[in-house]
Picture 1 (cartoon, helix red, strand yellow):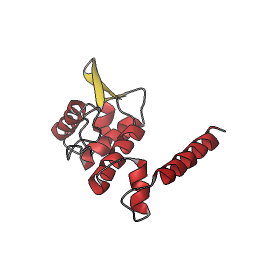
Picture 2 (tube, helix red, strand yellow):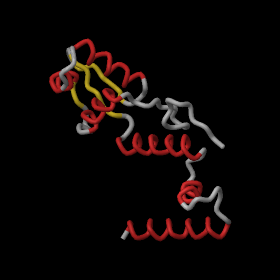
Picture 3 (spheres, rainbow, N blue to C red):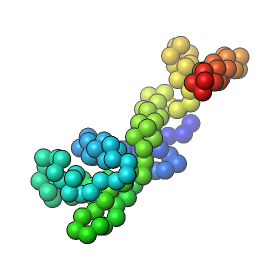
Picture 4 (cartoon, rainbow, N blue to C red):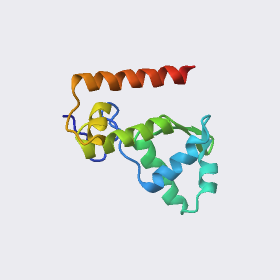
Length: 137
């Protein structure tokens, strides 16, 4: 059974969970996939300039954005998509709650079981495949 560190959202990337304020900043940055200047970010949020600078530094240190200096400002570009972050959070919560992030364990827990039989696992996989195929059409 794989366990993620309490503040890590993804075992393979080692990304740490964002604080509420960091997440607000990231949501704003995600709205600008081409990148956004520090000036625009500073103008958007009400915190003191030093606080905003610290938040951006922390987000950068956690690996969610890259920043490139352009003149007097930095351009921040997300390195992790919002979907990737959300998936990591869900996976972390599943591991925390069920001890595993596998879909089979989730379905078993939903049905009040500890484990699915091989036949049940096969049915779940077939259903997922069918749903996936329907989404492609």
